[in-house]
Image (tube, rainbow, N blue to C red):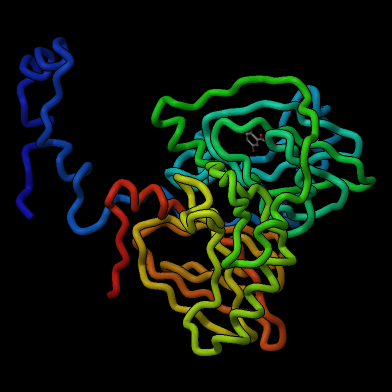
Amino acid sequence: MQELGRLEDLPEDYRAALTEQNLVPLWPSLRSVLPPGKPALRTKPTFWSYQGLRPLLLRAGELTPIEKAERRVLVLANPGHGLEKMQASSTIYLGMQLLQPGEWAPSHRHTPNAVRMIVEGEGAYTTVEGEKCPMRRGDLILTPTGMWHEHGHDGDQPVVWLDVLDLPIVYYCEASYVTEGKAQTVISEGTEQAYQRGGVVPAPMFVRSRQTFPMLRYPWVDVRRTLEALAASQPEIEAVQVAYVNPENGHDCQRILGFSALMLRPGEKLEMPARSTAMVFHQIEGAASVSAEGHRFDLAEADTCCIPGYTPITLSNRSAAQPAFIFIADDAPLQKKLGVYEVRNY
Ligand code: GTQ
């Protein structure tokens, strides 16, 4: 590829005249914004140990009262972006949130979309637009863009969950902001049960519900049972994986980030081709390894890692006896909408 002229090749007075008029020559930077063959990736393969971060999160519970935090979160930051940017990848934000018994994280709504993957503890709940969503280990709870949400805790042990937000991309769009609200009144609970069987949806003859986000809670018991049924009924399938979708239309459950759950059968090794999306892996149950670009991360329960896009990934179940269950987040919905999504089979 042709080497292009450098900034230093230009006379000082010419550069000063450009700057004076807020002008920049393209050619010294052309190769960095359009590198050959593959993007320049800031996202680095990064691992966050739950046993490592848990004591620090509990200590945050002692150091900072909930009133002084609103959301008591340790952010899982990717050093490739700079820790202060609070990004796991270019589009994904990850945080581990702690709520102690009796605490309340007040109602607000914001433009970024969020989901919660519950890691430990019993008795907490998120209320989303009046729907009370109990939090149990492995459950996925959506708080889509613009929807009121608050977190409460009636149990007697700490509750921890993983927040996954599209905050970095919404912030980059200069579209990220929050509105504070009053405590919500609970008006419903368990409405996800209407969708517990794929293939049938609520359909009263006289009114058809057309909510944008009809399902806010995906109970782990149901997702796990579905994965086991898939593995048992389709033993030849390459990946025992289910996507979290809108049950009314089959589309991704949110518009920017995509979510799925994957079961690695005992001893299974799964080779995944390079895709243009960075990916986040979070161990729900069992023990797996994630290998990419010469890195190997051994995930135990509640551990999380991130792998940049354009990178082939190998997932392995580290147990020959037990299945391993992994929660996956990526930005495929966004990339598909933008027309830049790719799978590379090399
Ligand atoms: O629970 O609403 O990790 O607003 C970051 C921003 C959690 C939340 C985060 C938030 C929340």
